[in-house]
Image 1 (cartoon, rainbow, N blue to C red):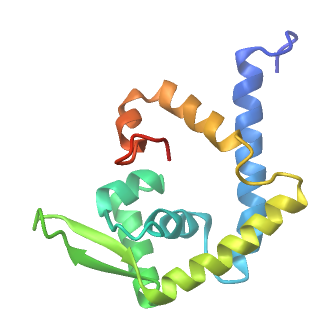
Image 2: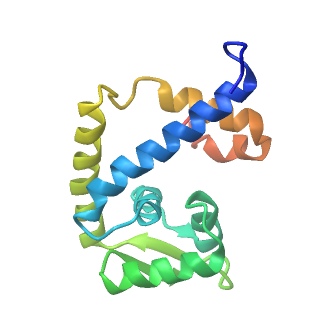
Image 3: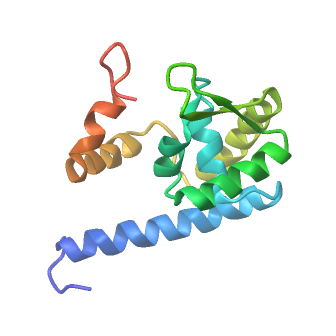
Length: 154
C-alpha cells in the first residue's frame, strides 16, 4: 500500500487483513455447530455470567439492534441464551447464557483455542492486550468499561 515500511496505511491494511482471515478461519470452526462469528461474540460476552444489557451486547457484537435481536432470538431458540428484565432498570433487558450455553461456550472455546494454537498464536501472549490498548486509544469512552472492581484490566 505504501512504499514506506511501517506507514499508517500498512497498519490499517494488516489489521483488516488479519481480522478477515481470522474471522474466516474461526467461522469454519464454528460452522460445524451452525454458529456465526457474531453469535460467538455474543456467547463470549455472556460467558462472564453477569448478564449484559442488549445495548451493550449490540455494541460488543458490532451489530445493529434489530440484527442482534434476531440473532439472540435464534440463540434463545437453541437454548443457549435467555433474557430477563434488568432488576435495576425495568426498561432494560439483560441477556445471559443458559447452562447449555455455558457448556457449548466452553466446548467451542477449546476448539477455537486449538485452531489458534495450530497457527502458533497462543492465547494470552499479550497480543490481545496490545490490540485492546490500541482500541482504548482510538475510543477513549471504552477505557472505563474495561476495568473490573479491582481496577485491573480485563
